[in-house]
Amino acid sequence: MFINTYINDLHISEGDSYRGDCPMCRGKNTFTATKMDGTIVFNCYKVSCGSRGKVSVGLNREDIYNLMDRSSELPYGKSEEFEMPTYVTHDLSKPIIKAFMSKWGLHKNLSASYVMYDVKDDRLVFPLRDENGTLIDAIGRSLVGCQPKWLRYSGRADYYVQHTWEKKKKAIIVEDVVSSLVVYDCFPDVDGVAILGTNLNHRHIDFLSKYEHCVVALDPDARSKTVAYTKELKNYIPEVTAYPLTDDIKYRKVEDIEGLKEVLT
Image: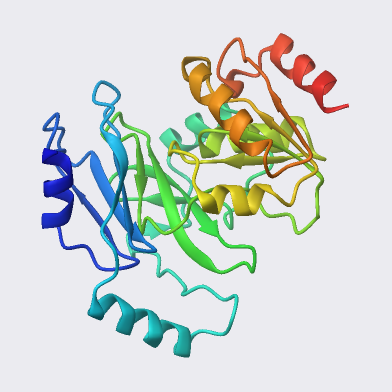
């Protein structure tokens, strides 16, 4: 297949990511590819494209040496810290930022430690941390209609959850960060886990398997994924429920919020 040849020709090193124009739809800077454990996961963020998947390419000698070097530098269970670009600041004073946060009800619970601003690209930036609190990535939402709408800064994180350091037993699985924060606002005793618009992978499953009950509540246009994820997660989690939203959870429709409360009880 053409895409397999294209992926192989990128020569991505283990743990690294590539971002550029999509070879299938020619979308500008919409294509990402990340190599983890000898497999390259690729995705085009252009809605009309749908180019996504994974290609097993194995590990070369350089990859193995790099992994050995990293394992000797980092303590067990620790992640290498991501350095936030200098153009991402804590200044949230611009009216466009306040308008976006007010629109989605984010202004009540978010402090500067949970959200930043990309002054170069006009993006609201959400730091992504691992379970140890280490900053490993960030994702920025365009405030001016730029593509891609969501931009990953390092590509190393697989999910987002607002860490409160409380061990919660239930989670609602959503697609993006804003939806995750809406869950946090509406359901204080439940984690909102955003899978960041990607396909379900083993890192999602490893993280989600700590919960006793997960509700898959993806956007209405992703019903097939909702069913598929629910079926897959039932192999790892005691209770998994698929909930068909009437609209994106960000809109906080009464019937959706009340329906989720009922499912979670």
